[in-house]
Structure formats: structure tokens, C-alpha cells
Image 1 (cartoon, rainbow, N blue to C red):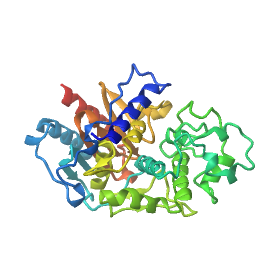
Image 2 (cartoon, rainbow, N blue to C red):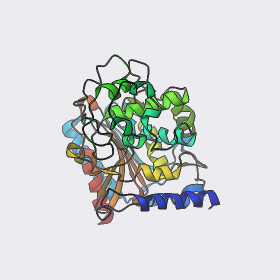
Image 3 (spheres, rainbow, N blue to C red):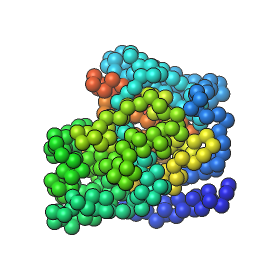
Image 4 (cartoon, helix red, strand yellow):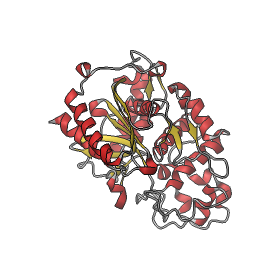
Length: 376
């Protein structure tokens, strides 16, 4: 390990030791940064995924068969799942498509988009477009604060956006109340700052807010001079070999930071693998491992309906503790998921036809079943 890598490990461990606000006795914290930082993989998945049979896998056949059986039984009732993939280490060990799903099929990954936006914030920090996650949003949108007389709004930072704790009166979990944000014809970031009420101190309370994720996209665009899609292509997607995608824009031409990125299931798996490997891809570090540590850390307890997903939230990634196994995941409406399970070196991807789906939480049940089988 080089001196630089060792310093990153020390910094990450120091950051973990200094956090507060979370009951550490209730959730173990994985040490995400490890010796994989500078280990070149056997192959690069962008030239085509290599497969591994169950005979060569740590994930025994009975576990895979059990999950597939449960998924098939559920699909016989709902007919909504379109793909299910499992990656172990860097190898594709299971790939199944249903209905109109296929390797080339683009899926609206819904709010999993938020989790990818978080990775782009890491790149913006690395490029010094953003100082730190503690930088105030008033630094980026000073023009919107000219007529705002609210000291609480002036305290909001990037970290508060990432952890869904900015304090706005807002909860659109499941696409519900957004305080008129969706219908606003002007700049939605301006609406969030000037026309949305603050009801709690920033950093205190989790309140699921897609407007915060979209503001992250606006910050990337403003500071980079590129659309978020162009930024993602240059600094992330190209390195991962992600070429087949589309990203919806709002009325003002800003890519939605919260939703409507369309990816294939295999490319969703690449995102999960990048996170599983601490931001490392094949032979280079794409994302600062210290940021990955922070992104997957249980920064805040979720409240109310958010607990249906998980008790904790990181930087636009959910953090679940099931039977002392940490499960990090991006989740989207209707059952779109990227699961990352460091303990088992696994990434799992689920997609559904979200317009007909009744399966928003079914993959979570399947993941819990996976954990049960792996540790029994």
C-alpha cells in the first residue's frame, strides 16, 4: 500500500471515530477502505462481464435457487419484475430477465438516481468545484438568498442535502407532497430556497426530499459549466463503460438529480461494484475511498415512512442493519434497487416495470432472506 493510500485509510478511520448523533451500539460500522484500493482486477467488466458458476462461488447454489424461487413465486402474482442480477467480487454469477427485460433494456431507475448523484458530488469535491460537504448552499446560489430572511436556511450545507436533513417542511416519500415543486415553471432550486418553509434545524431530522437531490445536480451544473449528464459521462460513466443511458431534464434544462436516469441492469451493477470496491475500478481509483466511507455511513436515523426502507441514511444511500450484516442500497419507486453487501462481497440489482409494480419493498424481503441463508 502506498503512503497516499495509507493516509486515506487513516483519515477514514479518524472520521468514523469522530461522528456523533448515531447510536453506535445499535449498528456496526463496516471498515469499507481496505487493501483493494490498489489491487488490479483480473479483468475489466467494461469489455464484457466474466461469469462464475456456483461451484466456484462463495454464494452456494441453494441460496441462489431459494431467491430465484421466491422471486418467481412473487412474479407469478404481480408480473412486474424485469431483471435480477447478482455480482460476487467482480464476477457476474446470476443474470435473469423477465417480461420485456433484456441486457440492453433501459430502466428508469427512479430514486436510485439520487445515489449516483452522490457519487458525482464526490467527483466535484475531488475537482475542487466544491470545497467540502460542509460548504453552505448559499455559496452556490447567493442570488436566491437576497430576499430570504431566514437564518436557518443560511445554515444549510451540502451535507444536509446529502443526508435529507435540510429542515424543509416536505416529505415526498413515494411521490407525495412536494409543496408545489413539481409544478413550478421557474428554477426549482430557487423555489426550494425562496418558497419552502423551514420547520427544523438543518441536520436534526431526516425528511425525504427529492428537491434536495435535484439541488445537488444544480450545484454540479453551476460549478462545472456542464450539464450533470455531461459531467457524469466525463468523470464517471466513460470509465465504467456506461454508454447506453438517458437522463431526463426539468423545464429549465437541468438533469434531475433525484430521478429519471435510465440505465441497463448491467450498468446498475457496475455502479454497485464501484461502491463495493471502495470507489476503485479495475486499475484506478475513480472515487475517493474516504468519501465512500462517509457516503455509506449511517449519518441519520430515518423517520416515519422512511423506516420502511431502513432505519438509517447516509449520503443519498440507505444503510440497513439486518442480523449484524450491513446492507447499503440505492432504492427507487416500484422496486428499483442496487444492493451492496460488503460482508459477502455481493452486489444485487432488481428492476421492475414501475408503472405496474406493487413491489417497492419485496427486494428488501429477498435480501433479508439472503442474509438468513448465508449466515445459517
